[in-house]
Amino acid sequence: MPDTFQIEIVTPEKMVVKDEAEEMQIPGKNGYLGILPGHAPLITELAVGEIAYRRGGSTHYLSVAWGFAEILPDKVTILAETAERPDEIDISRAQEAKRRAEEEFKTGKTEDDFTDAEDALKRAETRLDVAQKK
Image 1: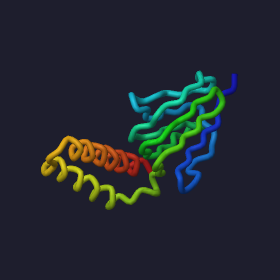
Image 2: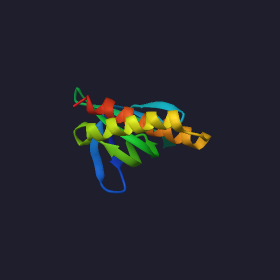
Image 3: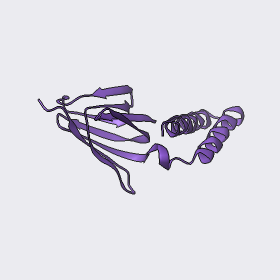
Image 4: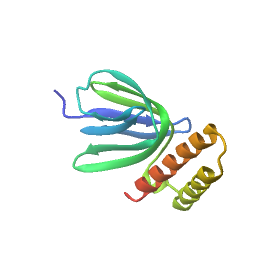
């Protein structure tokens, strides 16, 4: 059995990652999934969260928001609405987005307002967490 698998992480704008990994964790809609070489085929919806993959003793992190992942025994393909490496994240913009989301929790009037604020807060917090892992 191979020790690695191919990974591709793509957004509508660009190819973010094309690499190999020994293991990977991705934020599935119903929780995080751990992936090793030889994983059973699976398609899942992505949530807002952190992608981590290990290759050659180094762990790489990305912030991701929404999309889909196709997992095959020898390849993982992620089609994400957004995906950012730590050095691509604008920390001040993420902090401002977090502040706006927290304000929306205080002033929101409908369930949709609160759901939107929760999504925005989760995305901002994830971006800030990943940015610290440079």
